Image (cartoon, rainbow over all chains, first blue to last red; front, side, top):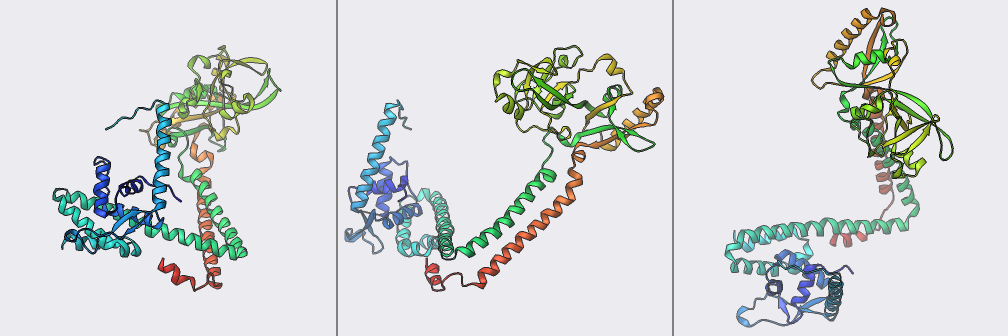
Length: 110
Length: 372
């Protein structure tokens, strides 16, 4: 399996606590990253398509409230594999950070 | 045209299956974003177009390429004999064309690996009556050097050296060169220094410059060799510099060691012994013809002044490029390159013929492949 791209990782993370539709995912990613990452629609759906193909996310049967529901709107949710992949990637990043700390790399936030 | 319609046109950049699966959803999301941030509309359009172009290119071109490669691999596995034949034919075609291209590049397209190589000329003594050419005497060289059409001139003479002292004794080819030889070519030593004026004086401490290849081969690239003395023809000489890798001056053969000419007083005055090869840099403001005229009038005046040695002697000049044989080789190399391109075309058409002659792939796989 190819490694997760940064955007795919953000998508998995956005779906970790709730099922969301496409636009909600974009907004959640923007919130998660304090606005640093605001993926375009094309980029987001390329990522969604791959994640669906790799069975890390799937289409959820949940529907929104009637007033904002649109037959075109679909909700996505994490699969068990997706949750495991997210956990594994988080573990990998945690180890990376631990090593960086040991080497006295000081994070600099913009 | 409304935004959703325009966006649906853009979506055509994507492969069909992605458009079918996600197209309407993407249109919805994009429209929502446009409505939410009216101020950012142009940016949204630009960013979106860029992503769709990139995604579409990747999906259509690269993914199809992978499919084709996999199909080709399957085909060749089933048919190794055919694959081997095609492979060999292509190797010959491509290999030949590449080899000829490298020759074309080195002999015709590439400039000489020296500073302003096109201004470098070789000067020889010409016997005006018989038409043959000869080397140059040290005294003539000193006079030619001052010709106003030349920016600078230098001389060299190849010779053998006996290297003794540490390790096995060795006879190696080298050259005695004018102190300005490397400067004139625009070559600076990679390590150590170039010859300086004092090195080129008679009675000066003997100095030597080595090629990078010889330094690596004989002295294992030992950097502490610089400043040390080696025994050349049973006399010590200090190694002052190492030339850059791949330096070569084709007219010297495989010369690996250089020492200054350091002409003595008697040598300088000598017009009889013609033993120097002369390399000069023509002034860029002087066209080649004017240089030849200027040298002709100089040699005429020398002939009047020193009739005993210089009567009937002129100067013969060629560009360094010509002398190295690039120009003689030109037409041949270009022609052979053309032939190799034709061979490559023949190879391609032969392989295409072979592919047509055999059912290269079960025809039933095409609908599947096309659908992907």
